[in-house]
Length: 117
Image (cartoon, rainbow, N blue to C red):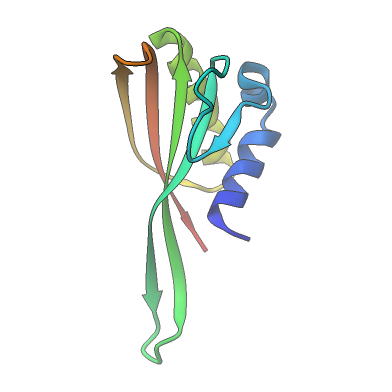
């Protein structure tokens, strides 16, 4: 199962996430006129750790979970419940950062996470 599949299943199954964003969890991009809050997830990089025999021993996928809201508080609330869900599912937290998109006038909190398989 891909890291994205595991991530989506984790977020979709989390009651607290669903209470805030319902079914607005998207891969790669959010529809332009979609209602907020919402989540977008992406795979940023994949690192393969080989054995000395050249086979893949471990795959480390770095993913981003972007939580969108019309206010900073709304984006942070979504990020908080998403963070709780991914940590409980065994993802590793790498970074958390906030931003404001001037063009869409939305707040975004980005969780950088890793999935090992």
